Length: 291
Ligand SMILES: Nc1ncnc2c1ncn2[C@@H]1O[C@H](COP(=O)(O)OP(=O)(O)OP(=O)(O)O)[C@@H](O)[C@H]1O
Ligand SMILES: [Mg+2]
Image 1 (cartoon, rainbow, N blue to C red):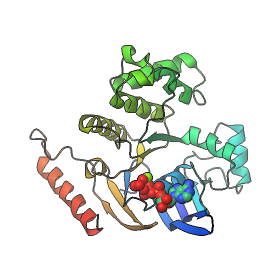
Image 2 (spheres, helix red, strand yellow):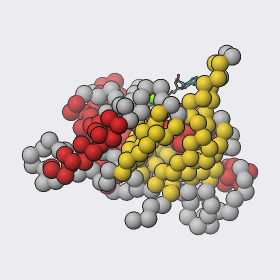
Image 3 (cartoon, rainbow, N blue to C red):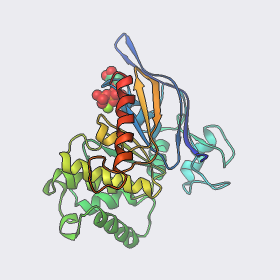
């Protein structure tokens, strides 16, 4: 199958300068993210995973190089005048060509993110002064002008992650950690982002909640949601179909795992044997990376 590129980087570099010392965290990365993929980024602590995720998602700008999104339909603007202006200014490319985001101002970048990207972090960063439902809705308002329709959509999505009316009226602090993270995932996808970015989304969850959140991500991906996720665990990584290993700011290697085949430990899984093979391929790959 021919895959469509949704993000491409060219010579992406990120350098942090602390006092007199320069730290080259990302070094001339050339990579592509493909539409429909569940891409996983792994690597040692400090290897630059979060930095890469922030650069890819437009949370931060690279020091050098470009990040280009291929997200627009032929000849169409983004629907936001300010963003269309920023796109013209950043290179005046033809409408159907990519949007190069590294030259955007902070405001344009923020608009771009709200139009095209979704985020889930290790900490859920929900706003504690409003209900779970309002947390989701406030993220949806830029794209969804019809408040009633938006509320319906938010409630439907929340129901899918088993947050019913009793719970979505609550404030985040009145919900369990697992519930909070499920709300955060819904908030991340309320705008139907072209890419959902997740930085260790299960890093603060217990085993059962980890499985729940991973199941939701898998389900979203199976419905077509492109996902880029950073993780430290094999359990989370095996949800991806492509795992990229980052070492010292460069891509050391990557593996194509094919689609997730379910839990390899589950006796009821008809694909159990194949899932176990797949799991082993991932573990061998990671071991070869010195993981
Ligand atoms: N804003 C910043 N200012 C200075 N240095 C930074 C900044 N952000 C990250 N770094 C440095 O860049 C390196 C990579 O950090 P990054 O957060 O990308 O690593 P990571 O792979 O996500 O690690 P972890 O697995 O621990 O989350 C680290 O050495 C870190 O100290
Ligand atoms: Mg990190």
